[in-house]
Image 1 (cartoon, helix red, strand yellow):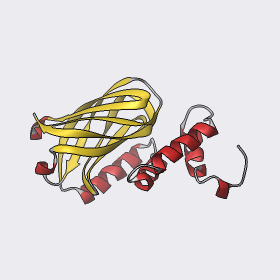
Image 2 (cartoon, one colour):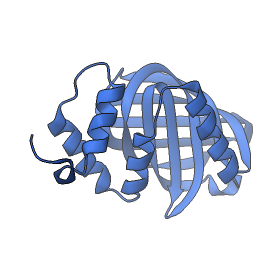
Image 3 (spheres, helix red, strand yellow):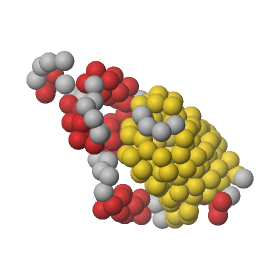
Image 4 (tube, helix red, strand yellow):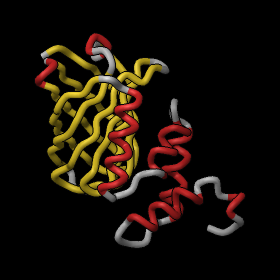
Length: 179
């Protein structure tokens, strides 16, 4: 593909994936991924979160600090992640608050197909963690985060380590239930 950077609104994403991936990234796939993300509800927010992913411990600490600013309560959580490149399933359990989230998402997230996650779920009101909601799950190697929305309201975020490896993000819907 040719043209100036202004002809390529996905150029920052292309640079990001070339910087973080272990090999060369196909520009047409990045363009398709960009168009998919931008077409989603909260697309600009999702794109921004992907562009600001880094594999450093300091960046993970910064993300947790942001979560502490937005959400007043946290609990440990564990999850299973099924990752089939374009399709992802997330099954997250926060046993201390008796909540479970199960959802399916579409996007681009190449990597190992199955992984276990261990981390922290941040939220404000446990009563908001019930019923259907939309979510975005993003990953950078062994680091995974998920954001959950009820309409336009950001109700929770999960940050954790991934026993597996993937890079990318997926957008979908699921449901919180008491367990």
